[in-house]
Amino acid sequence: MFATRFAPSPTGRLHKGHAFSALTAWTAAREAGGRFILRVEDIDPTRCKAEFEAAIFEDLTWLGLDWETPVRRQSEHLADYAAVIDALTARGLLYRCFRTRKDILDAIGDAPHGPGEAVRPGPHAPDEEARLLAEGRPYAWRLSLERARQALGETAWNALSFVEEGGGHEGEIGVVRARPETAGDVVLARKDAGTAYHLAVTHDDALQGVTHVVRGLDLFEATHIQRLIQALMGWPAPTYRHHRLLAGPDGRRYAKRDQSITLAELRAGGLTPEALRAELGF
Ligand code: GLU
Image 1: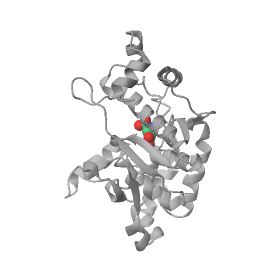
Image 2: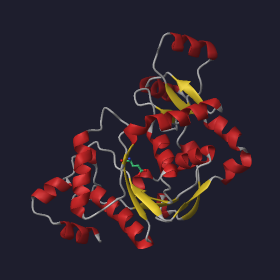
Image 3: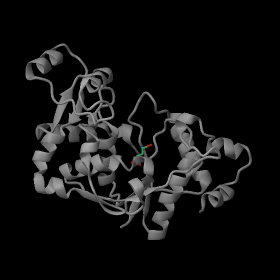
Image 4: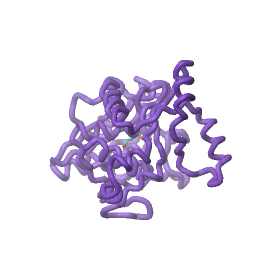
């Protein structure tokens, strides 16, 4: 059965871009006679707040959306993600990385290929790793693309792909070859949170039976590495529909960090859900 989701992180108030994304996913579920899931992606304890989560429910209800309950809150399921980390570690696919962001940026700056290249710092030498562990230094778990490639085998690695129905990079549609190397050796468990976005999102899409991932084009590039994680874990590959990103009156796309006008502010200013839906094309 068709199932899609809207998976916001409660790090701020929702703006029109979120409304567009949520309406796109909800309408797709309605048209397919399928399921619509709302998932709270709150694994970052420093940025997520309960008040923002409450506001998400309020804003989406105001917009006229409904969703399955109970809503999955990722922070309540950290043991699930830890189990995946353990499984991948046992298969030798992850390595400990004690480097700070600055160490890595400095190393990239020194390397001949220069900045902008995907980060693949590689494992520490065994004696160095043992020393850092003994010193109690914090570390992240990174996925080794080299070992992942060996684990999948050349044939499966080369055949790794996903179906894009929305329109990816430069309008790419249909079967898209997954290029996990563009992401580098991504962090799958962070020092502070025990999991990272790519792992939690793919785990939950599989667990919740999501058949269609409907989300903004800003996450298209993330699909390459997410597809690899699914393949390594034997999780099903959803179909993807990346939608266009909404631009504000200034021509710039809506984003939390730019302090875009929020749905709450628009509501307080007298905007009705009907008017907003019509404006957004629903
Ligand atoms: N939680 C992610 C965000 O707020 C979205 C995850 C996804 O749709 O894959 O950007």
